[in-house]
Image (cartoon, rainbow, N blue to C red; front, top):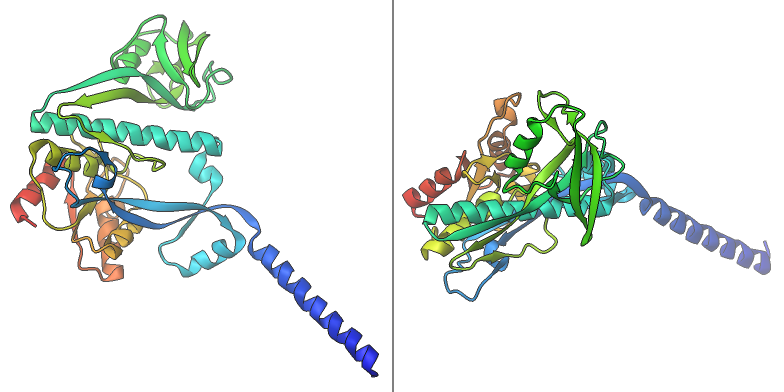
Length: 345
């Protein structure tokens, strides 16, 4: 081979190497239809509370789960990370678009904050008011006569010109109507007022009558002293328990712990703590942050085995990662408060 041919061969080899590199890069970065959930962060709730008060303590933490679209290389390497989980977008979002899904999570967060503030205010005996603004449409059933009219994120303000003070009142009113009863809804969508008509339907799997939607309260809570929680882009209802504890210690002007305490679980206006998803990832995230105590929902709904409860999974995860962090089961707000008062951690 002469010098010219050798030079051409060398250039050809380099071009093949460069081409192979870009092909490999494209394959690795190729988008998939999967979402990866992995351990997120443990952060002080004080960073979300908007106040200049000295009683905004930094001891209580909320914990997140990281959720991201998976490119091919991320999807494949996720099998090497024991606390990564893979879900299709359909499993995560259902029929909602990315925008609708994010809005739904934001609505859940707002409701979680409202429930936490209401319960904490009641527990601390401080004045509060709750203004009912309507209901958010979270999903629409296939048999709903409003399926092609309502949209996820719509705010229903009135039914048949009747206003309600809670979602329970609205549901009670609808349940007293016969199936196929004509109804008129007043709806707010993107600040625009709409009126739409349809009929009531039977709710599958129940004896109830309704519109055929999943809904959630839209309300505004004000407390004295004033306390506002701004979660930004963080969504979901799972920080409810920790929000209520943080609000309670703010209202009573007393620090509930001197060490880092985290936890998870939804909360309702009666203080009940409910199950959440991704608790294994939250245990990992909390342990990495140096949390000493972690509250886990002990709720066991009908059809859920004991080993599948949040608490059981949290205990298993703690053993796997060999953490010294204590996992404490809670069924309600008082369980968490009692533990903190008794152990003086």
